[in-house]
View 1 (tube, helix red, strand yellow):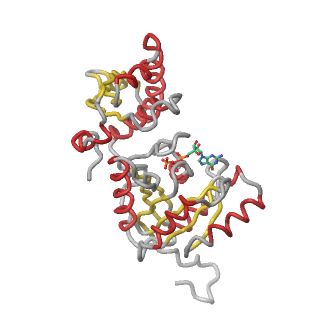
View 2: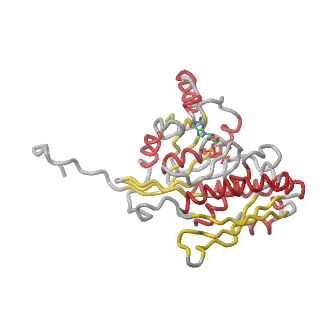
View 3: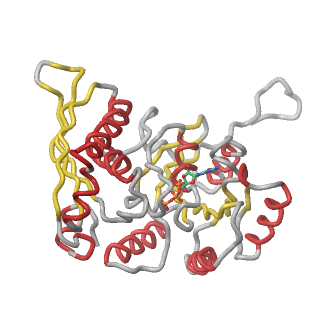
Length: 311
Ligand SMILES: Nc1nc2c(ncn2[C@@H]2O[C@H](COP(=O)(O)OP(=O)(O)OP(=O)(O)O)[C@@H](O)[C@H]2O)c(=O)[nH]1
């Protein structure tokens, strides 16, 4: 304890805090990118297609005085397919399990019905503080940002409202501070240095899916799923990982799109994914990637379970 007579003494350190946060917001508002910026490495995948994220991927922010575990959630949206319904129930159960929620609204788009829908949902989550985050400030003028802060303030009762940009780093650390403020006092939940508790195999599958989505913007909205069937170091080669994976599409025509002329597109997808996976694993990678048609997998409960989407 610092006493008034001993100015040389350092002040009482803040208590160590640890706990969970999640980001919610319309698809494409920058939730995954913000999590990556907070964690400081590429953990969740991002793409310019809405609804890229399907799993609660966790990133872990380590600070001297805190450990913040960020659960990345899919964009809340009105369910259309069975897959959509599962996504939403995943989001809802996540909301009640975390210590603080970050509600993301982009600075460069007017507040719309989607944001209002989520704000109403959040008002029903009792007992979890919500920090409203105005994202992508690099895309908006100061006036636009000021207006957006006011508009977001009208959407509900928030513990704080903070503007930030994951693109240029503006106030990303402040977002971290404001989330950490709401965590309970406690011990570190994960060893220092851990950035995510997702098994590497899941991250690898996500990187392959990201590569496969690239360039087929409108043709294959949400029809691609990936399973990594086997992943192991090559015998006698510490520096090489063998990966056997399947890319699933819903219809034969989609298979053609992915494969491309004389297999050119698939080759591209494999190369792009391989580079990313090598960065993640820190070894060379041999990637055996095959395509299968799983008819209407998004509507088939058994296939959904196989691909890791549980009720
Ligand atoms: N200029 C700019 N672009 C951003 C920023 N944050 C995210 N983006 C871009 O916005 C797009 C969507 O970002 P994501 O992080 O995937 O969005 P999300 O909210 O996680 O999307 P879903 O997974 O679909 O819910 C990507 O193209 C990002 O590069 C930002 O601060 N500034």
